[in-house]
Length: 85
Image (cartoon, rainbow, N blue to C red):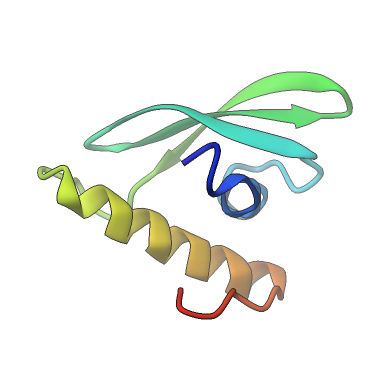
C-alpha cells in the first residue's frame, strides 16, 4: 500500500482523515473497523484513523474497501481517478 499507492493514501487521508493540508501519508495498521495512518501536516506527523464503510471480516475485503475509499476521495476532492480504478 505505502510503496505502490502513496498518492492514493494521501488522497484518502485528505478527504476522510480531517487532514486536507497533509503533504504525505502512510498506512501504519488496520483492523476490521478501519485503517490507521500517519500524515504529515505542516511538517508534523499526526495519527489518523479512517473507518471502513462497514465492518470487514475477510482479508480479501480490504482491497475493495481501499479502492472504494480512493474513488470516493477523488470525487470529494474533485480529482480525476486513474484509469482502471
